[in-house]
Image 1 (spheres, rainbow, N blue to C red):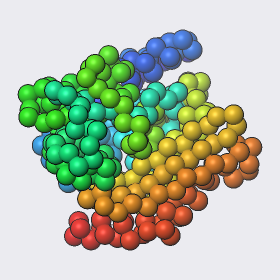
Image 2 (image 1 turned 45 degrees about the vertical axis):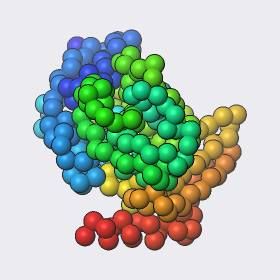
Image 3 (image 1 turned 135 degrees about the horizontal axis):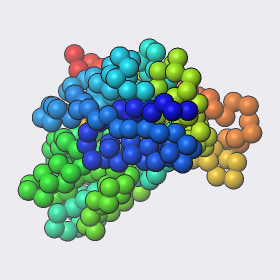
Length: 309
């Protein structure tokens, strides 16, 4: 096969790293490819908080449009940024093995503010999922908006008076930027599919689907599907603080999911476990979401919708 696959990517350091990983993996399978970097709307507007932009796929829609217009053949995304409903004409071609799903706090001077739930501090993040979970644990803290790629956000933290900022561990670790002054937030539940990379292509491009399919990790794909089913069933998007984590160990899938109110004061959560041999184990995300809706989640989602009106 002489065809060179064109790989679309955002032009940030992390996005290019992810696309280069896909390029190298394709090369191992005997496929030639080249990178085609583009700037997304989410990278251009670094002022408006993500939850005010209010557009699902803020980091993916530019690549989606270019993919559909055949400017390239496949696109590589951080899977947590991808809407649960893919654009018409685009299909999931592969999910790569997951890196760390955890969030971390990068602190400025010391981390003593983490030890006291009544402490006063200012933390930076643009994620309302992180914001809500943080305020639930530290109700006296203030949250400031922090936008930009990981390099920009680290620089802003360094120049600020913030006590710390929250990042995805995978993003910093992939490009070797995780500072020593960082701590994993084991209590914080991640965004659905956090730490996973998704490759998409045009639904009619058989060659691209076949090539990328060789890179697919079934375990990560299954866990990410369950987490995203949970998100979709709760009608969640960038403006909804929904978290989910599915893991598989010894043929048992464990799932944990929750939704918070915007101020972190209300919470609805669930935990489930099921054998992967069970015929309906892939449906556990939908089942868990319906449980959460019935145990207070519906009131929380309605409150968030009303707050946006």
